[in-house]
Length: 114
Length: 117
Image (cartoon, rainbow over all chains, first blue to last red; front, side, top):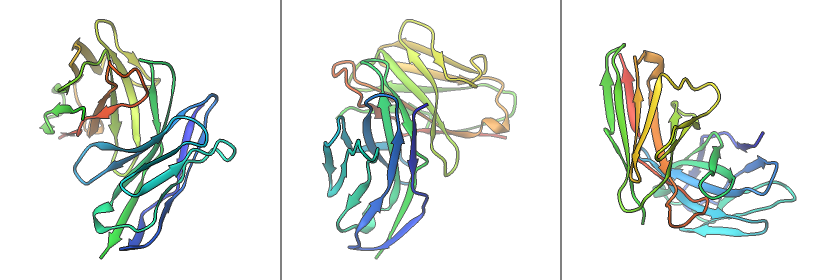
């Protein structure tokens, strides 16, 4: 079946450091890929997405490229801030309109120190 | 942007009682909504797909008689945890794809934390 594997956390970085959170997936078809962020006490918010191979999703300084050859969708940010501290989830969906289901990775907790 | 709300945000109940959680799409319609549960420091696990006007579809291993789902309208789905036990304590999250887009993107509610004592 389909699955998503994320690097285990927590990841602790100093402010302005470079961030990479690895995500790889297994899928039988051509999934859409997502990164969601969950701030403490809040629900999931869409951070970025990519719907086909070689697409790059970007938002708020975060980027991820859909790599079909390596089945990866690694999240990167050049300079993290304290406010980026949260849990980051990689996810995929497959299906047709109205039947999409999400499969989430285990989440990676990021802590950014001032 | 699209907003999904959940009510209550947290609830404590005694073992053996039932608890109802509401999921509402505030500014869009959704024929399908999804219910997840999230254990501490773990990922979201899909429990069931709520379908407006028809029965919910449950994932393997989820007891349909314990987790009753009703999709009463295009903006409301409810999850009732019946005869709750401490092991049902969890964070329950719903999501909904906007009817107008037809794409894979979904909007998530803020979650409901259930504690069964």
